[in-house]
Image 1 (cartoon, rainbow, N blue to C red):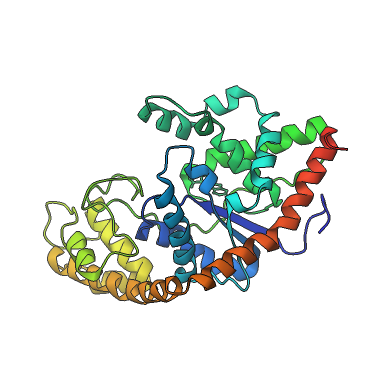
Image 2 (cartoon, rainbow, N blue to C red):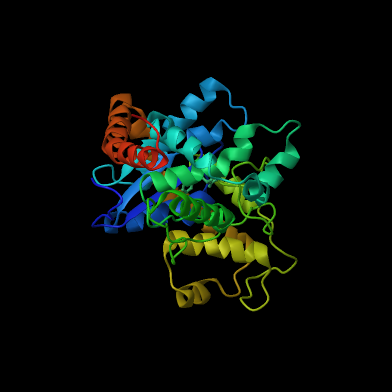
Length: 334
Ligand code: TRP
């Protein structure tokens, strides 16, 4: 694969940190979208463990989380015959390119990152890795000359930074990087917290009633949804409903793939208790097959090893050739 030539099929790349529980917000907002588009592109889905260690992770738990996440990708329908599932730390070029890009990135750009500011505010001492986090993300993307990066709104600033870094490198050293486009036009559903529908469902939230994790047992799923925050009304009114009711309907619609008309016809006037029961049943019925696939995948560790090895082997030549080109442009190496 030659560079800086483009490739025939545009490349898609996205990444998820192996920390915390993957939940229905991740699934409906990102994974189902990836599964839908994976055959139209050359797809790389990265388990960004080097990003995870920007804050302390217990080694044994991290090891498990990495494999769990890979298994959940597969159980969600990522097809390893076509898409590459890559553990970031297993391809050294990610870290190498990150360093090279760090050297063309002004500190001022990183100081402006809102995610850094938010995370730094929670830490007693701020690791340099947390500061460099967006440069490593830029490296993930530019390493593969990815054209399309499907991410949520919260990552758009990082994507803009990636473009700025690429542009600056190209200006300093000559055309090297393909400029990644912004996110896909079709984004998935935006699922809010079940305990607080004003904030997006988040892996790092700690409240007991906040999320439905993909691996939650049916009883727990039912309990969480039955306790979800609604509003002071008693039946579904599409004109006046608050964010809690809207969120429940959203979850149902995303899983059931119903039209707006179907939703209205079925749910208008329904009492909240019945709405919740139906949402819970829908979620359980859609997650059960996913959980069964997950159990099957994790019962055969050789299979998962093979998928991850094949992923790393497939992308390494592309990654290495980018790093080679970048070093050449910079005058590094013999
Ligand atoms: N920072 C992203 C997040 O928190 C994860 C990520 C790392 C990523 N590298 C990436 C996403 C490359 C897209 C492309 O969600």
